[in-house]
Length: 113
Image (cartoon, rainbow, N blue to C red; front, side, top):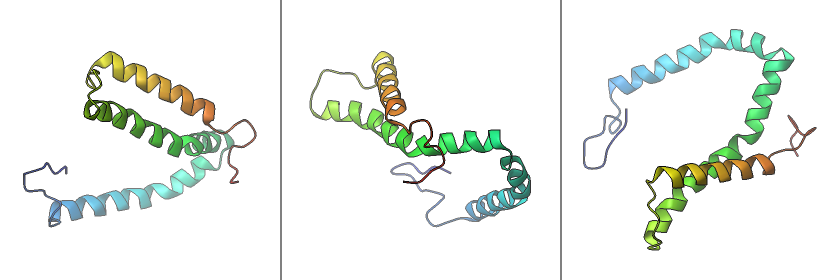
């Protein structure tokens, strides 16, 4: 279900395959809703969901920084190979560390402020 540049995409125009995939995913979510509500009514799973959810946007934005950083360094002609494993792992670990430090503190889980 991924389109590549220069090739015909199966999402433009939408095909029957894409429609079937959408209907199947919506049906799976609707069928799983009662089970998920019962499971999330317990304190431990709900705490895990709130903890991950409170940091989700931070993690998303930091992972974008990890992707844009090496790419922009090639535009600036900085001698860094963006595909080198060591560089990507080190940059990812540093950004995750910063995201964890900048995340919500204790007592703020599940609150909107």
